[in-house]
Length: 122
Image (cartoon, rainbow, N blue to C red; front, top):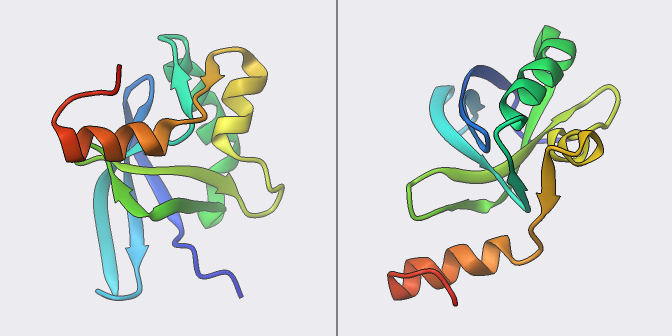
């Protein structure tokens, strides 16, 4: 059984940041948090692409949240991705396909480096 939480998207706040509401089995309630898309760098056009993807995939609690051990970036945003449980498509793969995002392979390392050192890696 898949124990990743189901997600409702509240709004897109930046090209790489989404306000979500997720189920929390630990708290047995809903939790709202900001999600930063992990592993990609998005340009301004990504906001519209995210809205389009969510409109297609968000009905009937089809979205699941996938995170990297609930790691948060220097702004307190949860690092992760959204996936449609019926099709398996992820939001980041869609953004890459549409050409509005680029792969950022060292994203998690950069976040940990910034958290530990107070500055981004050079």
